[in-house]
Length: 382
Image 1: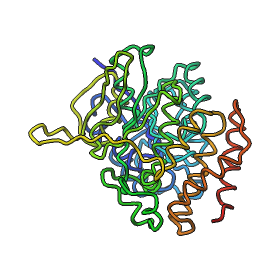
Image 2 (image 1 turned 135 degrees about the vertical axis):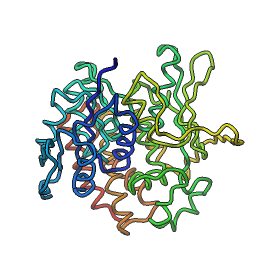
Image 3 (image 1 turned 90 degrees about the vertical axis):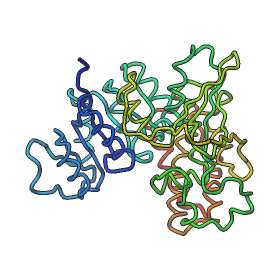
């Protein structure tokens, strides 16, 4: 009999977190929610605690009041120190890191440092500190299984061949809401336009990243560290149907892809149950319906974020931290009406080009680079 796996979901009230809970509902005999953590969405967290009755419930924000009338058997905590204790609790087998942005790095580091299985949905952890995180995982025996659909696809495809015979990986991109437009046609894009993704239902920051294709730049950097690749071993193709989630090419010319309807519950379930594949809540392919599959080269002139991603992956060091931090601030300013759509990538490039590059930074130096880039992006003017 397969033992019950005890899971902590960090960012349980977000889109990845709620999809994770769908998977757990389907596999109650294999998976148990032992801990739930959210930053400030108290009402939704209370609903989740009432249903799953975890041992731990953590509110990250220090200013949010812990609710009264709590469920018996669930201990409520507040603050980052308690989040650290949850991650390191001996009863926790798997940590789902679904927090958004660079704020998720400390939690990912704690989980890796504790030698846990990490279902990683926070790509920024590897974008900012991929070299250090992967080195520590090798030391502690932590198992990182990606939850991003593209990296999960690569992880799955790599099971079909020897690693030393890998030629390259190809990340697919939907192209976002502005696929096919020229750069001159993007000058008047509003936040409302950028938030209308044609395929995926995601949070506002990730949706804007998809519109600029900065999400793919981040994924290029993530793939470089997660799979131990050189930048020239990574390619991007635009696939509007979002059915092929990525591809892997081996030395003999064989290309292996992972194909499924767009549904984040599939890669989440894969990470939680690996290596088992069981029926789950994810959408199934309808083979009675005709399918059209397009694979198109990306337009690097219209979407220069991709170029920045390849450059940052090639250089390594502090580039990922600076690129990510500048982008987070630029997206905030765009959504707040302070920056134009085309200025998002321009801010990132300018900050990246003017930062003091360090090829082998420590964690403290990466965090300092992150802070510097945010301050520079705040000051940036058209």
